[in-house]
Image (cartoon, rainbow, N blue to C red):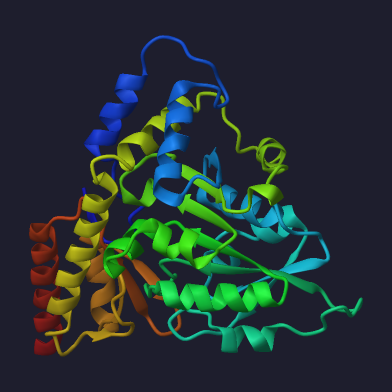
Length: 346
């Protein structure tokens, strides 16, 4: 089996989470979230993010993003996001299709929005001929591997709220950002004043564990209906809820994200020593981007899986996971150097 550096979605499920699922697989319990596992998991979320929240477990990250946006949007309103944002590039038009609203994408440096960039994207307010901005959506970690600091998020939130806009955070890799910054989940969410969060654990060792955290319960009373209408309410919810209990207990989320980040840091440092490799983005968490000699990309892909990020430049993405091992990275580096030496000899 090929070792994959393509995505943290390619990794398996943490054994502790599998064990939690097995332990929950006993007897009968109520369905659709009316069970003790789900109630305990929501209590755990409140320990992490604060008690003035609503929590909704869903099946997919795309579902979490779409429902989060839909909660605040009317069809004539718009979402402002980075051009590289997952909702803009990798969700097959689902946000626009299911919300009926427009995405306004903004060119960014390293995938990060700022008040200065957002200012230019807000125009035509009150003009019936123009779609009306309503939500700013941020990705944490961004699709280019960069990380927003709490101060950067707070500045965007303050900017948004001063203009009557809401802020959504796509936190599919939120744990990796927390570890990279040495802060808490609340530091990046509750304390910055964001309005709604798509919080994922699937990329960090879980299985079908995605959620929506509403920091404005006064505005989320319709979310339970949107979740059902959006085909994200599933019957045997205990099997997701128990994953969150394991994930947020005993620092499992931290250990998994730290390994992914540490392995990416190690890989980044070693690639930086190879003259033929050009690292194209600063390292933020567990993803790195590079240009390799084009002649070696396909031979390298025969042994290791990774994504070509930019088909025009040949830029590739390498991503480490909770179960990435140093010995696997060393083997990858050895094979890469062998291909480079072979290319140079010709």
